[in-house]
Length: 173
Image 1 (cartoon, rainbow, N blue to C red):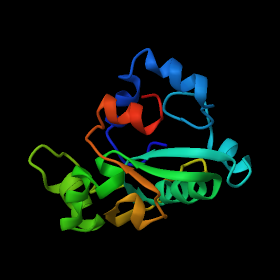
Image 2 (cartoon, rainbow, N blue to C red):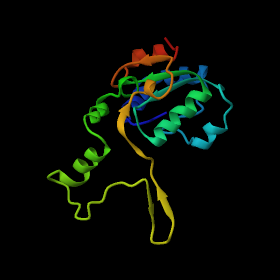
Image 3 (cartoon, rainbow, N blue to C red):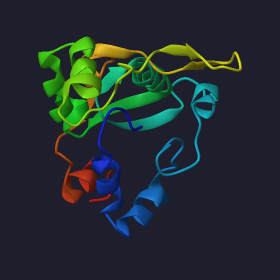
């Protein structure tokens, strides 16, 4: 799963090159939305504890990421915090020096390069001119490491994890 992260952990998995075929030979990939066409409804439909292992990368900063972590914990026998963001909050965890309002103030209003005359910031819900409601996940006031949201069985450190650590974690070497 890819929560709040830069994508480097997913790229690192691809950095194992042809060894990805060895991984595919010993494991069925049932949910990897960044690399394959999986939807949350597919994950929700899976039986509880039907997935052997989850590599969860990224920190949890919004309601959607938290929901993903909770669903995956329920569906997976083993939960692995994969990469620095999942293990500790990583570099995004530096946002914990302020709250959502402070971050939005800086990002959308007060930086020297920001032009935002209407003071527009992301909203959880808004109505379109056509009367449709559009929603976004709720941004939390803090960044959370995965173990602050769900129980974690193992940790694979690194920003991103090295290919050797990845291969050991998935049982290829």
